[in-house]
Image (cartoon, rainbow, N blue to C red; front, side, top):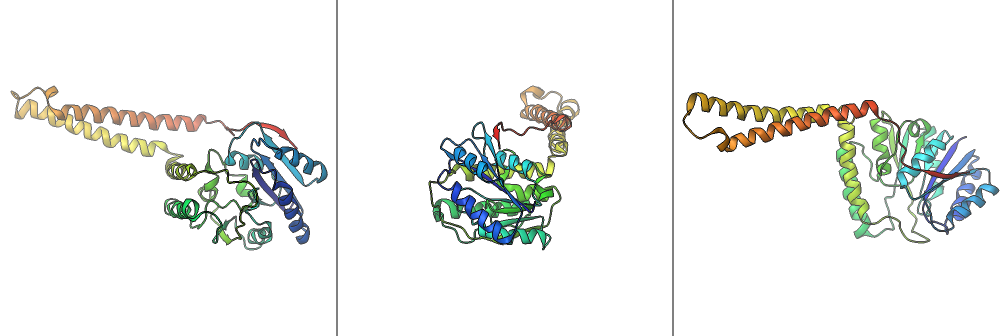
Amino acid sequence: MNISVVIPLLNEEESIKELFHWIAKVMQTNGYLYEIIIIDDGSTDTSWSIVDELHKEYPQVKAIQFLRNFGKSQALHAGFAMAQGDVIITMDADLQDNPEEIPGLYNMIVNQGYELVSGWKKVRYDSKVFKNFPSKIFNWAARKTSGVQLNDFNCGLKAYHKDVVKNIEVTGEMHRYIPVLANNAGFTKIGEKIVQHQARKYGSTKFGAERFTNGFLDLITLWFFSRFGKRPMHLFGALGAFMLTIGFLFAFYLGVDKLFINPTGRLITERPQFYIAITAMIIGTQLFLAGFLGELLLRTKKENNNYTIKKTL
């Protein structure tokens, strides 16, 4: 199997057949042995019926139907688990990703030695105010935080060596940061290819303005896990030690002052330093406990895919 094309979709009944035939034409022209894995992420239109028809007519089509909408990350996770190709291509189902880019992406993985190649929609047909400008800020922040130098983290058109997708877990809403997850896992040969962006032909976007807020929050989460995900005690323990040190210094000062310097002065409990010392020590203790709990969870973590499959074809 040369290529597995993984396509998550949600209510894309108008575009599914057209996208399939376009992909099939590209594959046949280039002589690839391929499969197309479609993940229906809880569609409420006739998308699954169309996918079922394609599966019955074309053996290359495989499909997963979720019981409800679980999100793009979970859809990709399920598709990656099913994929058998040497190279896995991901793309969206709305026809904004051009299947003609597949041979170029495939060659960069197979012939140029990249482990992951991300598409870069340098010229976009989205709203400049509501999508393009926020995307530039988002991508800049992602580059600065992660160290992965890509111009378009959120492009759905990407190519992966099979080893990459079998060794990373895409959960939550982390599909935007798969290159970062791969880099953190040791797959550092990451490239980028300028790809053609198509104007939306059918329907409307499934993502609202909240995706940018969620994206930045996920970026902070990813930064934390990349730095301290395997050693939470290093962060919480250091902060806890700092707070405890502050607390003990204030307590020591109050004790020395009361015993030797000003024994007839105000009661210790009437001085603000007393409450600073108590608060700092309580917070320090809590941070230490958070670090211990994090370490305990790491050692007892069980795999959780966070989605429920209704049907598989």
